[in-house]
Image (cartoon, rainbow, N blue to C red):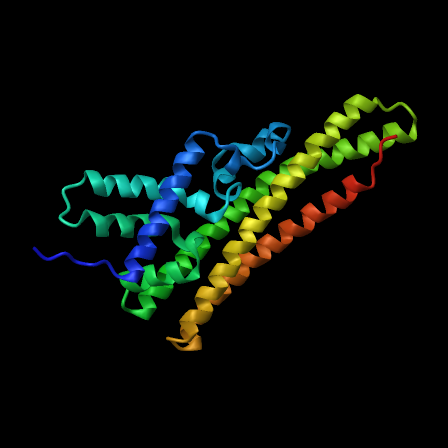
Length: 246
């Protein structure tokens, strides 16, 4: 009987999938290790619920964990002759760039030997993530517009010396929670941009700059969307910081 020793790369990929499954299990039980602070308890539900909240409210690994778990379980229950290999591919495919530039690029290179095909798929991945940023920005703008109105009203009440301290403090706590969540979202968005930039740099080592140009243009579009949201969140933070209750 011959025992085949897994390669170092396979072990790394297995570890990645196992980590994703572990995080998925923690997420399903509502672990505080994943939830971080309790800011979500006072935040606007539009920022904590819904499809656009799922992707950016979590770290890259957490965001892909559920998808990886579904893919891995499908392989385990299927009739495929090589369930381990299927599980590795399913797990990493579900994670995409969330698992890092090197994992993502290795996955795409395994799937597409042609650089043209590979870069086209990468471009599609970036466009899909850009649409997630746009959807999240639309939700954020709705919430921030209302938060600005609340801040203006509180400022007016303070100026007229008719502010209810307890009520104002509660409202400001909700605004602070919204800002915290949006800043976390922005951090995860920027991480995705950075990972894609690293992928493009790695591809430049193997292909011509002209071939990578379209991918780089898509990354720039995504980055511009993230920077626009960053500016709006910073503006709201500055507006909020100007209020001091006695």
